[in-house]
Length: 421
Ligand SMILES: [Zn+2]
Image (cartoon, rainbow, N blue to C red; front, side, top):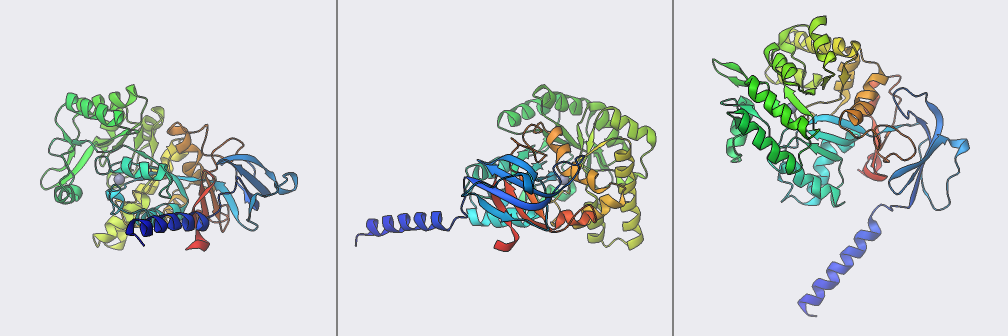
């Protein structure tokens, strides 16, 4: 047989096999019998059914009231809990192979996304700093359906003060030949922001206080540059994120009009009611990243009492902010830290005083609203995207159950299933 014929047969056969072995994407999907938490402020539906058609939610209600159409794929979800898909609003698509999305194979990307994100229920993430163009390359491969992953929003390359490339990325960026992300003037910050946003970035992220080490320690972002950068994002109706580090960095973030604080400032003691009021008056949001504090200090072999002190400071800040009505967005800094398991973050958020409904809001409605997706995401309701998470246990009894994910769907397609592993 001619080589080309053999090749053709092989290609056709594998395409056929592929199609046959793919999980059937039935026109309709019915998830039957779960306890439904349709939104953080809604009453539970004890035994509910969600009907999915063409990637959207077509019906939702008590199982007794909803007829499952003939031919629909049925998932028996009795004993489990169904919520809207989760958002992680602070990730970095930096670990290989995710940062090499142009070259990596689809199975490699699938496996990495599963380990880091979809296995924990994430159907949407905000990447707030990775290699230039990297997140957008990954997004393209997910959006074509080639790779199973969450919706990706990204700030693309970061903005550092001049001479302020943080000590913890310096070596990596050098090794990978990444162009400098430092900005020396307002004009330079604005023109790069304009380019990145035109290329498809969904926001900007700056180091308001860059950890440079040495005698300088933390280098603040120039206030004029910070304000120019935020203005440019706002002109295009995009959010600005900031890593504050210190009280000075917080002040720069507040006065420049930043929308989302990427971390609390655990080395700066408790946040006063006055400071919290400044943050909430400006309707700022915060990603808690409490696990990060614990992990970083443990990695530095800090004594347990020191770890405990800084984690407690972070919890005080997150708790005071949330009690004052501040918008908390679930976020862990995963991809910077290699700790993928979200269980500890839920425990620490609960310890900061957030109840399970507040945590669910931080995972669903709050980020959907903040980032302009509330019309399609964040709740289980007719017409919304079928981004869904099935949990083995009830987070109302134990918030750590948000980490016990059985199945994750994005637009009605399974992007993680515990049984298939
Ligand atoms: Zn980060």
